[in-house]
Length: 203
Image 1 (cartoon, helix red, strand yellow):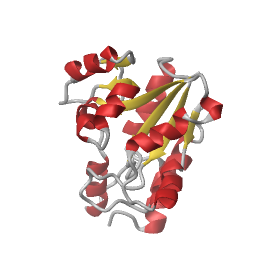
Image 2: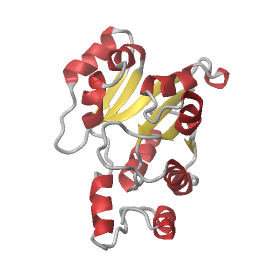
Image 3: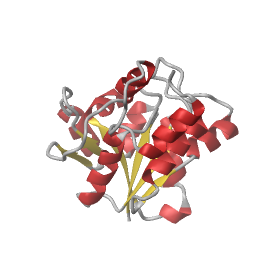
Image 4: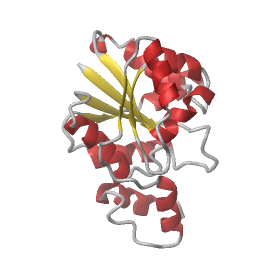
């Protein structure tokens, strides 16, 4: 089994995120995608919406997608480690060490923008050395081909398909639209919009 780990703030989840999930599944690059909201992203300057609200938005927005699952692993690790910034390598290791995924190929699904930033993360070099990647090119950010080659020199796979089509929209833009009382359809699934309105998020 090929399992893709899609990590991010998902603050909020939007159709760009969902299109990445469906694109890699439809392209048969993985058999299953696990969506993993971050407890707190150390590279984001704003305070995120509460973890469980972001998880709920992800869960409700993707529960109808076959072979996609939304995980609470960062919340579990936060409680266990008592840290607000859960190291990415610890999240990945949960799945690598899970007996259920024994023998599976684990891939990190990421965008070309985030992929180029991984070496600056805590244990970023080790993440590059120890993992397979699926890199989706986003507008305005070319794939770091040198880094992709580096991944492969360690015997890992780095699938960089620049022809995959997905919807390019950012959570930052959506949060700003909400602050300005603008309509966020069709960028945010209705399930997530209901949670945003109910909890008065991003105002």
